[in-house]
Amino acid sequence: MITALSFSESEPYYELKGQFTDTQTRCIHYHTELDIIALKFKCCQTYYPCFQCHQENKHPTVKYCQQDLDQGEKVVLCGVCKSQLTFKEYLNAGNYRCINCESRFNPGCELHYDLYFDMKNKENNKDITGDISCINSTTSKDNTSTVSAPTVKLADS
Ligand SMILES: [Zn+2]
Ligand SMILES: [Zn+2]
Ligand SMILES: [Zn+2]
Image 1 (cartoon, rainbow, N blue to C red):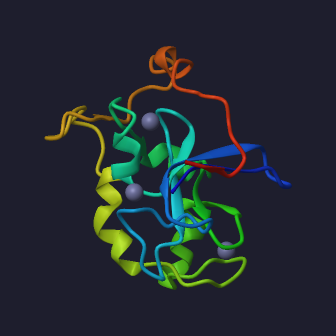
Image 2 (cartoon, helix red, strand yellow):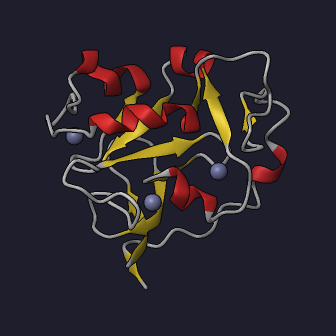
């Protein structure tokens, strides 16, 4: 099993962590032909193939709020062409395809948006899972530095 992938192409350097079964970001939890995206988590600024892989970190998930997405933050990674997409580009007018390489994405991911994104906002700063949603970025920075581990290039375990 692969536990970390790294890519540094034209985009800013970024990390991918999780329990990968291949280099197109399929993981042990989601690995159909269409499961080729990874999502960047706000709390650790790291891409994971799914929320279950992220839970291995044992820290609460901080969700993106509408404002982050409106600002064009890149939050989705296409596992095939390795390009980073904004949420809007990912939606691609409902085509479920990468705007760069046209690989097909899993439309079923739509059902899980609330695990990553705080689309409805405001009132509830905590949801039923106890995860923190949409907090001001200035107050949430502190414990992020402890999360980052050295990146390994294609480390098999
Ligand atoms: Zn995190
Ligand atoms: Zn996973
Ligand atoms: Zn692509």
